[in-house]
Every structure is written in C-alpha cells, then in structure tokens.
Length: 313
Image (cartoon, rainbow, N blue to C red; front, side, top):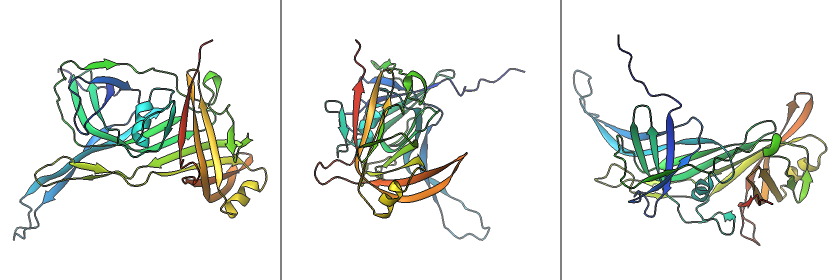
C-alpha cells in the first residue's frame, strides 16, 4: 500500500513584508522570514444558521458569515529579528534606535510556506495586537506576538518578483552564557536590584475589526488604549516593595535584555503595583507584584524601548 504524503511539523516557514496600504500586499514584496516557534495563524469565521421552525426539527440552512485571521506567533526573542513586529505593536517607528507608543498603524502581510507539500497561504492586513514577553533566569526569553489579520488566501499564487530574505538570525536572549539577559541591572526607582527572579511585560492594543455589507473580509480596523501590564518577582528581603504597593506609589521600572549582537532596554517610567503575592519558591520566600503602566505627565512616556547594537572593536 502506498504511503500518503503528509505535511511535516518542522517544514514550514512564516514570512512577512510591511504594507504601505493596509490590507494590500506590495506589488514586489521583499519578505523576511519570521524566526518563530510552534504556533499558527488561522481563519476565523462566523456562521449563519437559520432559526426556521420545521416539524422534523432539522436545520436546513447554514451559511458563511464574516471572516478574519488571527493567531499567536510564539518566538524566542532575539536582537534585531523582530524590530518591525515591535513597531506594529507600538504603532510607531524607530527613531534613532528609540521606540515609544504612537498612533500610526504598521500593517504587514504574512505568508506561510509549507515546503514539503508546496502550499502557500497569504494573510494580508496583519497587525500586532498583543505582546507577552517573559524573562526568567536559566531560560530563553520568549516573546509571543498576538496577530490579527484581515483575511486569508489559501493556495495562493507566488507573487512575481517577490524576494525572500533571512533575518539576522541572532541567538535568542537567555539568562546564562554570552547571551546573558539579566546581567544588566534591573532598576526600581533608579536603584539596581539583584533580587529579581523574573519579569514579564504584556501589552494589549485592543484592536477591533469592522465588517461592511457585501464584504466577507475585514473592512476596517481600529484600536483602543495600549494597555500595558506585567509582573515582577523578587526574593523577599524586606518590606520596602510591599510598602510601595500599600502606598499606591508611582514606581519606575527599567530592565535590559543583553546579547552578543545587541541589547534592548525597556523603560516604564511610571508603574503602580496592583497586587502582591508572597509564596514559597523552593527554599526561599518570593514576592510577586503585578503592575500597570501609566503615562508620565512630564515626558508623556508610558513605554520606551531603546536598542543598543554591539559596536565591533
């Protein structure tokens, strides 16, 4: 009996290209591969079902409703490989290696290539809606980008003149070895702390999609405020941090992800601890604080990312 050909889990690549017009793939796109871990984009569709009453109790009609695409691109976060996704997340452009929250959408097209069975899916009108960034000792830093797209084209025809380029392919940030993540100090109110065991950063743009009569795919997209939250865990040493929580104090948080190719510094100049949890962590006691970030009144910064490339001697 002949064996069937089935797609392999590891023989798939995701590629992306910025769009000038949201929802329209450039005529001669220059795609760059997204170095992702498992996780897929999928078609999301509403269904239409008749409520007609029939004496045999059987539904007679079902139709297709509005459609969009969505999913999460799970990644091992590395220097330079995800800079456009960060732009799309923050609705802004890098200016002299600094990125802050803006209000200009940065859409892009994604292509999914399954090389072993030679299939191509194209997802136009994509935006980064959410980010979940996690850094812990003895682990690779992960960044999960939640994507919302306008539609999907199955069995897409390759675009004439399209190019496909590898990213920088830098090693992901980690907490040991030459790509040490947490060797850079974490600053709480400008004071370095060496008791941090983990830090996470989450952002949600609250993107919504609108559909219009006569069109199944997304017709327009919009966003709400850039809700920025996270958590940070410390080894329990004293009551200073808990007092900040009790006082509802404004706190500045800064942490750096460092690697062989470069570094990113994340600055949240005004956060508030929103909850506290004291728990055992192996033989130690650990304090975990959830936080919410707010805009500062003097600099108007809520979140600032600064990239620092390594300069070869």
